[in-house]
Amino acid sequence: MRLLEYPFFRNALLGGAITALVCSWVGLFLILRKEAMMADGVAHTAFGGIAIGLFLGIDPILSALVVSILAVLAISYMRKLGLASSDAGTAVMLATGFAGGLIVISLAGGFNIELFTYLFGSILTIDRGDLVTVSSLAVITMVFLGLFYKELLSMTFDEQAARLVGIPVAPLSIAYNVLVAVTIVLSIKVVGIILVVALIVLPGLSALQLNRSFRGTMITALGFGMTSTVLGTFLSAIYDVATSGVIVFTMVGIFLFVAAYRRLG
Amino acid sequence: MGNTKEASAVRMSRIKRKEEATVPAPVLEVRDLDVSRSGDIVVKGATFTINEGDFVGIVGPNGGGKTTLLHAILGILPSKGRIRLFGEGINRFRRWERVAYVSQHAINFDPQFPLSVRELVGLGRVRRGNLGRPLRKEDWSAVDDALGAMDLTELAYRRIGNLSGGEKQRVFVAKALVRDPDLMILDEPVAGVDATTMERFYQRISDLNQERGITVLIVSHDLTAVFCRMSKVMCVNHDVHYANITPDLDHNELLRKGYGEHFHFVFHEHSCEGVFPRP
Image (cartoon, rainbow over all chains, first blue to last red):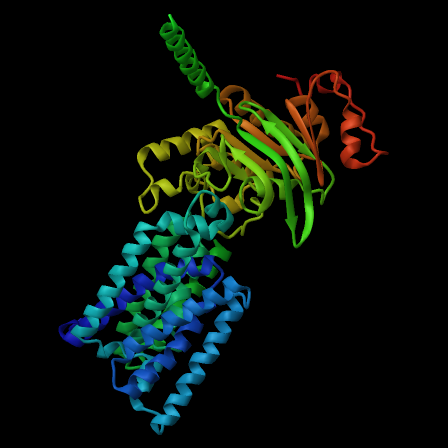
C-alpha cells in the first residue's frame, strides 16, 4: 500500500483505469462488429505517426492521433468503394503505417530509444499532463458512446434494419471508427502499440462468455478491464516486471478463469 | 342570384375537397415498377394497390423476385416506376416509423450476441426521432406490451441466442410491433419451423391484422395459410399478379401465372376449417 504514496504510481493507476474503462467499452462494440483486428491495425499505423512526431519534433501522441484517424477513415473509404473489406483494409493500413514508420526511423538515422517506450508502453511515466490528455479523450469517447449507445447497438446487431428506421448509419460508423483511433492512441502510453489490442479485446471477450444481456456484458467488461489494469499495475510493481506485460497477462488470466468457470459451471 | 350560385359552388367545392382529404391514401401504391439486380430485371411492370387493413400473402417460386420487390418498396433497392407509401413518393417518404420490416435473415443472427429478448425488442423503439436520447419509460412499457402480445413475457430476460426458431420469430415480430406500425412487412417469417408453431404464428399475425388494423404483407410458401387467412394474394415471378381472395377466385389460374402451367394446387374452402378457421 506504500506504493500509493508515490504520485507516479497514483498517476499510473488513475491513467490506466480510465484507459481501461474506455478501451473495454469501445472494444465490446468492436468485437461485436467483428472488427477486433482493426485495433491492432490502427495501433501499428500509429507507430508511423509516432515516428513522424519524433522525427519532426512534435508531440508523438498528436501525430499518432492524426495518422490513426486518417487510417480508420481510409479503411472506411476502401470498404465503401468496395476496394477492400474492413479486414483487408485494416491489413493494408497496418502494413502502410508500419512501413512508413520504418522509413522515417531510417531517415532519422536509427532506432530512437523513445520509440521503444511507445512500442511497449510506459504507464509508470504518466504525468499530470498525460492524465489531462487521457481524461479529455476519455470524456469525449464516453459522452459519444453514452449518447449514441442504442443507435450503435442497433446498427451493430443489424445494420440494414438500423438504416431502414432512419438511423444515420454511415456518419455514426465513421464517428465510431474515429473514436476507436482516439482510444487506441490514448492507450499507447499504458500498454504500448504491440499490446494495445489486448486492452481493447480481452475484457469484452471475457465478459461475452458469461452469457449475459448487453447491459450486463458491458458492465462486466468495464469491470474486468479496470480490475486487470489496476491489479496488473500493482503486481508489476511488487514483482518488479514490465507493467504492460503483467496487465495483459492479468487480462489473459481473467479470460481463462471465466472460460474454465463457464465450462465447469 | 348569380352571386348566390357562385358562393354555393365554392362551398360545394370546399366540401368536396374536404371529403377527398379525409379519404385515407392507400397504404401502398405501385405503378409500372421495374426492379433490377446486377443489371438483370428481376421484377417487371408491377402495378398494385394495398389499402388500409389488407392482409396480403406474397407467393411465388424461389428467385422470382419477392424479396427484391419488398426491398424496392422499402427503398433499399433503386427502381424505375412509381412507389407511394401512405400517399407520399418513396424518395420523399420520411415517416419510416409507420413501416416495420422483418427480413428473412433476421433470425440468422450471431447466437453469441449478448442481447436479452427485452433489449432486442427495445431496439424496435430506436428511430431517427429519438437519436442520441435514451429510451423513455413509455418506450419500455410499449416493449412490455409487445412482449405480452406475442406471449414472450416469460422469456423477456432470456438471451436471444438461447431461443428456439419459433421463439426467435415471435421476438422479431414483437420488435416490429413495438414501433406501433401501420404497415408490417414480413419476409418468410416461418421458414423452417414445425406445422404447429407455424399455425400459431399465422394466428397471431391474423389477430394483429384484425384487432389492431395493421396492414400486413407477408411472403409465404404456405399456400393454404395464404388462401385461408389472407384477404389478397400476390403471385410474383418477375411479373406480379394480384387478386382479392374471394370464394370465386380461381386459385390455380392465378398460381400458374407464377409457378408455371403444370402447377396444380388442391384447395377447398373446407381445407381451412378447424386448422385455419377464417376470421
